[in-house]
Length: 400
Image (cartoon, rainbow, N blue to C red; front, side):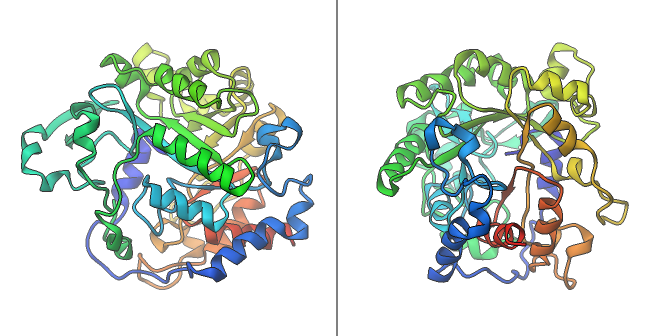
């Protein structure tokens, strides 16, 4: 998740220099048991008996536990993001939905899973001399970026690369897994999802984001039609199919609404930002306009949910401390929309000032306190890089 300017700004603030690494949650049997407990606890089952993430009687996303824990790019807090290893760990931990695909195209039209089309920061491409000449500077959605881009590589060429940790200064432990996994294609993700669903006897839910769709459409590499074709091929294109489709560009969601029946989500950045497609077509509206009651009612004509940045739910003051919640949750629910805001992370550097602990920005803060504050607003779910922590926090919240 996160392809607009402010998300890039947020990512740019993520520490790059080598530094101390914070406390890690236990990733062994104890964590898996805790995740299972979060799903099975009586208090969780109280939430309209939504205790498994399966399609109960064709209820689709309404069958998911509330609040829903969405694994952001898999387990980004513990494994390099958007790898099958990151997705698998998230599923094993008990995440209700896996964000298994920020999709971008290859030169030959395949869809692959990367946070951004620029892959210098998430793969070992810079170590491949045969691709040195591919390094270039491009302007995407008004932002100048230098590096290597998926649309300049064939799928066969991308498959010679290996994924690596995007923010090694913050998550030094994750670098242990650098080079272990390939860049997955979205079709490989769909095959993995199907296999895991059969193995577990329930449908595995995924969140899928179209990245920079206007930019890629201009290159003749439209995302929506390719995505819809794959979803239809794997019988995942219906109203109750276990796959949310999301985008920061409302017109991409409107296009998908005409192609497939999936639950659709409009992602929302900072209030003063404009979606890239709005800039392209000259629509003067900002996110602030989209989150008014009128704007939300319009979104509800073609989507089922919104994915706002957490600051749109609870803003911060100049010192980074939480203020009073906005009316967004109430207004979205009044329009019939669910909310899955993004992104909760355990490290101090990403937490509101109220919940930082100590002076090391890479150490874990009071993530449980922050989760509680956000859950208390009535949101329907939450994206997190640390879904084990999120599940435990959810259990605390639901059980009172």
